[in-house]
Image (cartoon, rainbow, N blue to C red):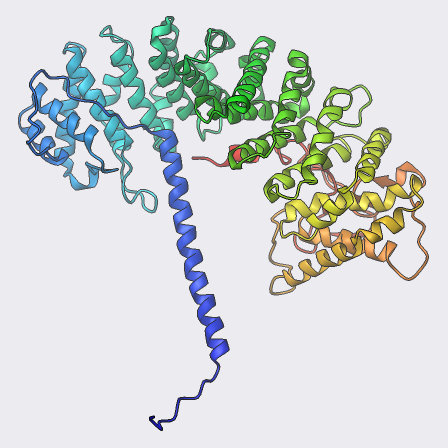
Length: 636
């Protein structure tokens, strides 16, 4: 054996840890980039649709002939415009498997201008229907292409280039063309693809007046045979509504509740899934429009529309759960839920009584069904998450004696919310939404004084306390790493400590045996370990009032008040005026319904050290404190 001395192994552990951290950082960066790309691809898939068609020419194409590339067909079309070269390019683009088979960046400015000029000529209504259809199908595929660098740079896309040419005038003429429904269908397809490209393209289409043109074309489609045209019109309109800050152009363009009713009243059966495709696009359009101004909902949604939508929601839910369908009807559920959620969060709860009462409580009963699905899969839990958000908005007004939220919604929805927390296999994301919905019911209604609704909320709190396993479930969620789940959980535990003592003499022992002290200490430790450099005065981990520091402050107060060495009276706050759920005076109170309101406190030291403002003790409120729900703020 060789007697050569082995090198000393020094700092091996440190080197390995450093290398591991470096590799994990690189992996995280790669995964983050991939997530962004996948998200963009999903958005593109929702916005754009490729055309796959076969050449309609009578001349047969030899199977041994190698298909021509799109760029070669483009050169032939520019050099010799004819129906044959046009058809060749259309077939080449439709059969290409490349996501960007004809990039705009690969063409010179002169070639691109000549190409669009040729297409504009073929779009003339004086040409045959075949020429117009080929031109529209080429434009559909061009608009469906994504510029390879458009996600990271500002490279010009085909959609922007098309809008800067004379093509829009040809598209407008195609919407009223007498050539037939095929031309109208394809023209709407092109418009939908362009609207799905960017906000700039949507604004440009709206400024060119395409909304009233599409609505006028929609009113001409009165037969059941026009299902594809109606689907494309609703899809194009929903893409134009996507991401816009206002829905007024649609109302000003002539869209009314009668237009919605004419579609919603069509007879649809299980074997006519094409009609459900139309309804799915209509639901998406209504979702985007109801997420904007309140007056738009007043114009578009009357009692008849809401009754029909609630019936559709019940029918689709039963169909999916009975037949385990994952097709078009399954894709219609979330848009319907979001319509109800938008209505529940707008106008200070104006539509909540109507949502609860419509169709003999159909919406409330169907929402409860989604929270009681036996062995839900990932897709079902996703729908349940959306349904839970709507439930939380419907329970905001619990506490008022004669309000439907108290008398109808709460008895149906509150028990099923509690049952979700008792199942250990459900996701943390779902339980987080459930916790916030429960706390919406327990906290004082937005804009109200806590004293007038305290009795009803005390009863709900006692029901949670007496439910077997609920205390353990809440304590377990206090040790998770999600501050949005910790905040409502610690608020409920705080209410247990400060209110239950008057109903149960053994409350102190039960809460201590449930390891509440350990959970509260964990919250304090988590806030300490996550403190930012510089004492946490310049950085915020939560980004708003009611973050981890607020949770730690409440946990520290509970430890000092109930787990100290001195004797503790568990029935503090003998007068209801001294208590508001989740708020131990002098913890401040903030009303989400008035974003200009200022919070008040009797102790200045309880200000949030991260943000320099008062902490939040109220529930999430309607739409996370905004008129619009959080998902509607993610613009495409």
